[in-house]
Length: 270
Ligand code: ATR
Image (cartoon, rainbow, N blue to C red; front, side):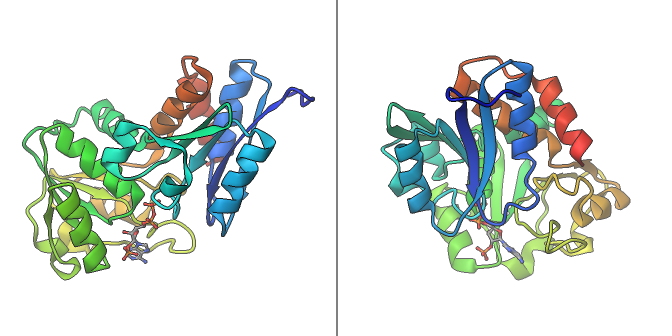
């Protein structure tokens, strides 16, 4: 990789970022397409300062992750209609100093389910968590005809999201009592520093159920292991991660994303 005065800068903001593989994935994509661009990790407590810096230094694009997917929205100049409906932004593009927020998580999640040939229409889906990724997946699953139930550790936040997206809500204590056909794990429980923990009790898993995880590092979370042991069809977070990243690449560069190279680079780092 050649870095010079023309190199375009991209990055990710969030906290913590110690385990993110977004830089590995996006730098592999830039390299595969021979772009003079670099992607860095910007761990921060202050997204507002970062966004001012993005404007000042003409940083071309950002990924946004935990816990800023909703927090960045009022700091942007424009929100894409899909991201506005979802209520979360995971992608920022800098268009001549104007920052536009978009969401590629919903499409990434749906593509991961599609790759595993999961039929969504008329299925009951229980979403664990109510953060930015949960918003995108709830919206995406609803758009494909699913009946979506949300559960969240903080009742008020979960109930508010359910009301906003016109989904059902169930109390955290009752999450194992739902008769869901698709389970979607969107909390950070299972990745460092919550390795070997699971956001749901073991009894929630039933044979034949689809259990989808959004954590990709590690690939095998406790959630995935427990679900598989109980006879569920499991989907780890890798495919959704690659697909949401591929859509970001498309937005930033206008080019077809080099999916195979992106997947290979991420797998090599895991
Ligand atoms: P993001 O926007 O990237 O999805 P977020 O907004 O911080 O991140 O949301 C993280 C989700 O994981 C929230 O639903 C959070 O639950 P609370 O609303 O109760 O905070 C959930 N979460 C985080 N840590 C958790 C834990 N230890 N146990 C259960 N849920 C947790």
